[in-house]
Amino acid sequence: MQSVAGGLAERKGIGFRVAIGPHVPPVVIGDPVRVQQILMNLAGNAVKFTERGTVDISVDADAHGAGGYLLRFTVSDTGIGIPPEVHSSLFESFSQAESSTTRRFGGTGLGLSISKRLVDLMGGTIVVSSTVGRGSAFTFSLPMAVSSEIPANVSEVEVRSDASMPLLGRRILLAEDNEFNQEVARELLEQVGARVDVAADGAAALEMVAGGAGYDVILMDVQMPLMDGLEATRAIRRLPDVTRIPIIAMTANAMSEDANECYAAGMDDFESKPIDLNRLVQTILRWLP
Image (tube, rainbow, N blue to C red; front, top):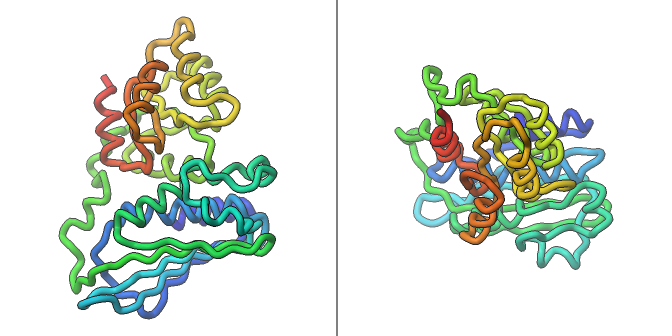
């Protein structure tokens, strides 16, 4: 996560720092995949909405319950800030910042609502403090048990070992408009051997497929500017002389009606966000010859 968010911040010319407090135990028992997804969502928004200054991630801990800890993760920035009237609806699906801000930077999308949902699932809380023109801070707190040993299954978060790269040599087109999500997905897929090209919207994806790049599979975000994933899929399916490429929908709307809409547009499969790499790899493998 630090390499992805830090790299985006560096390219944007802003600082990126991570600080671990002295009271954080060396090993806790929790859900590393969900925690990483929350941090990636929050850090991605922080970098996106900060033009100058710094994005900081800090972790601290307090004793909690019988031998446990309450871990506090704070992602703060020196960005544009959020108007107070927006705070109460910020974690709702499809919530956006003020329209002129949205046009300039792109909206927060579903990242915050997903983060809130994941925090709730882990029994935690998430709050925001923000001042327009000075920046924002998102803090989520999670109860964690403490372990004196690294759990035996900690490595199961990784999909591959050095000897196992199930997508080795496979060429994947990732259609995704959010730059942070692009970097995360690319890094994860490259870990399992894939070669990844990125299209920032449906129109670009259509052009790349029409150009005869020869992709093994397309991962298509449903909500994108200029041309959304559904429209892009329909257009790809109408292309003459293009061998049918498996198209997998990538969306945070994991509802049956949304899946049906994707299938009706010509998509072959459906994956919900946040990305579960093990599950995504298995879905991709189902459609490869």
